[in-house]
Image: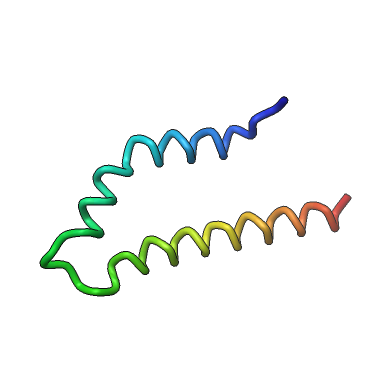
Length: 60
């Protein structure tokens, strides 16, 4: 089974930075939209990934 390097790097980064991100999002003095920023970034990265994958399939 082949694990794509980008996915492996993403999982490693999530493991390393998840405590910091959790603290940043759950800060009591934080704005209400902070958790949505994280989700928006995840959705945007998934969109970019799918767009590139579809574009590469059309070229083949």
